Image (cartoon, rainbow over all chains, first blue to last red; front, side, top):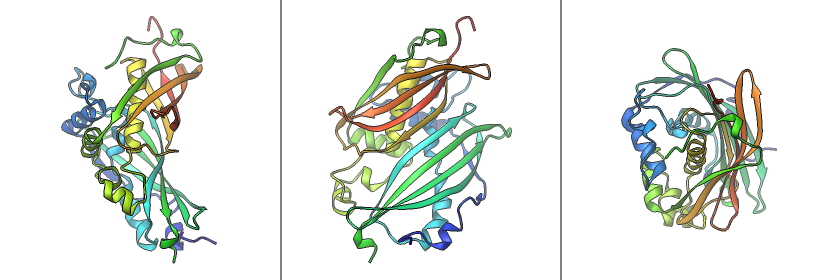
Length: 156
Length: 146
């Protein structure tokens, strides 16, 4: 019997959510490229490319496509001690460029839980999204695993 | 910084790519938090990390470790390469002020649908040599002569 997964949350599994638009800004690409290279200078392709500025591959971690889905899941779920990033998986099809407008189609892929030694539970939330650009070309598939740790104090 | 272009013919299974290493202090964490819009207390506030989240200290974002792996791949493979797939699991937390090294090793070299591909085992290890973040990547490389 599940300790934290509610029927309301389970009902969201495999349901594709409303698409969301993500605009790719040159300044955001530059800031991200600088942060991941710090304290060295960023790769020139990401800040001043002759063919237009392209996104570093992992810039997609800033897209926040998870938030609307989590806002739907969260209300029916109990409070947890801490949330952790369990893992990421990406497939990159085409460059993402400054000025692009991407459409994300997110969905909750699965929910599961595992018992912890302290009597708590680890909730595993698997989410995924497909991204296309303004021409309809597929640019990215993203998969995210979130872990929510419930201690005994959260399950009383 | 990207090195010389690597060509598919020149890659050998088993070879390791140059690592990308950083000592990840609060400057690195805060810059990344702002750039990735990831302003989360467990990555910024030691009191919250220890007292509320019951962690040893502020921990490094998984997304930053992922970026370091991509940096290692991009620097090795060259500008004409393309990272097709990247996957990581965050198995162990990395604490602030640890030196992390993103590394990779060629596992397989193959062609598929006209693309020349290299599959690599990738990972981040801490300054104790522990692998905290294992993963895999597939990189498309150009052929010599185009």
